[in-house]
Image (cartoon, rainbow, N blue to C red; front, side, top):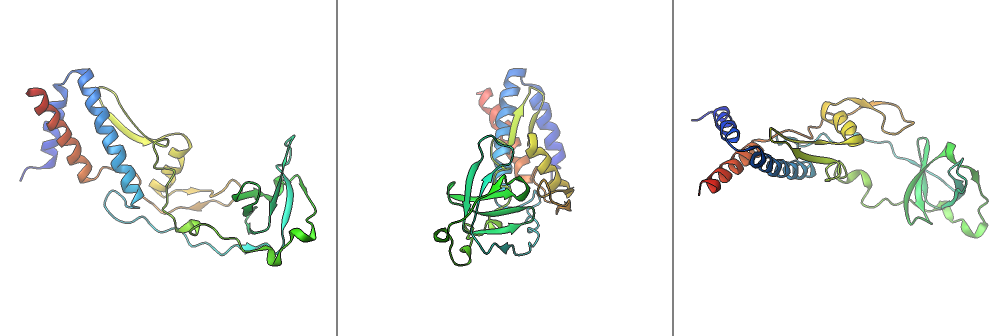
Length: 222
């Protein structure tokens, strides 16, 4: 049986025989193919070895607010907007609830509230209502934004192809890739995250790039 390392060596020799422009174009196609493969795998919540990502850490139930709130936000803004929430919960240094004006769930830091406004009796409701999060947010797949094309990037030169994260996404990805400590929010305590392999070539990825190279060489020889 042929060792895969030998195939990679042969593939490298074939690549070096291509001109710089042709090589750059092929490597760009390979990078994009691997980018999509990596994104799809992350979407399936699997690491490069095929194991499922470690589950999210269990979170203590959030304490619901027992009254409607209305306030100006944020502090220091020349034109703070009025926020009105009937359904909300205490979420550490924030209150999270259904922002009626925005029409969706939003979070606000307590210490950034400019001024609390009176709530009329007719605006109150029993128990301030129950906050319902769509599909219970924490049950949704992890890294949904991290794996999109804006954050998971691909590129090439005439010597190499690369796939990786950019900007703040790169910092977040590294924390999960290596199982490091980080703060879940700006004012939260640092916690250690489970190691979740976001990037890494699978056997299928390696075979795919070899096949792309062979297909290219065969087409060029015709």
